[in-house]
Structures are given as structure tokens and as C-alpha cells.
Amino acid sequence: MILGVEVFGWELFWALACGGVVGAVVNFSLNRYWTFRDKRVAYDSGLGGQILKFATTVAGSILLKYLGTYALEHYAGIDYKIGKLISDLFVSVLFNYTLQRFWVFRKQKP
Image (cartoon, rainbow, N blue to C red; front, side, top):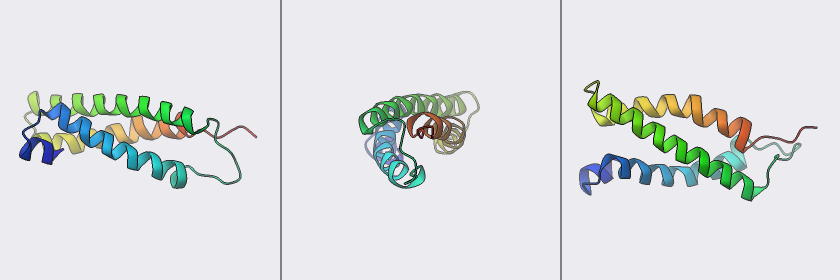
């Protein structure tokens, strides 16, 4: 994000979106194969369903992070880099983790 804004001169939204997409690819792989993996219980959705749910989650996450960063910068006077960290913390814990754990990577009921 900082590279996009500071070096390439992108608008904050596009820098956040680009960073979000790159992070999403890494995040999906780590979560599917490591964080939420349980070899004893299968996932409720197949790979295609998980990708669709994950993409929906990422789109919502990018939007919430952008709105939070923008609001903190423009209304609270906080530097966008610090605002991004604050927004990331709240969105990642309250929105991303919850949806990924209980929707995207939900386990089949035994």
C-alpha cells in the first residue's frame, strides 16, 4: 500500500485494493492448508465454493479497511499509515477471522 501511494502515486483506494488482493492470495493458501485445516473433518465447501466465499470476504474487507483508513485520516487527522494499521486490526479480527472461520472454511458437521 505504501509503495503504491508513495512511489507510484496511486490513490489510497487502489493501493489498498492492490495490497488486499496480494494479501488475499497468500492468506487463502495459508488458511486453507494450515490455519483451519483438520485432517479428521472435511470442509463444508469444496475449493470452488471456498474461493467464491473468500473473494466475497476479501471484497468486504478491502471496502471496510478503506473506509476506516479514509475516515481516520480525513475526520480524525490520523496519518493514513497509522489509520490503516488501526483499521486492519479491527477488520481482521472482527470481520475477516469470523467469516473465514465460520463461513469460508466451515467444517462439515459430524
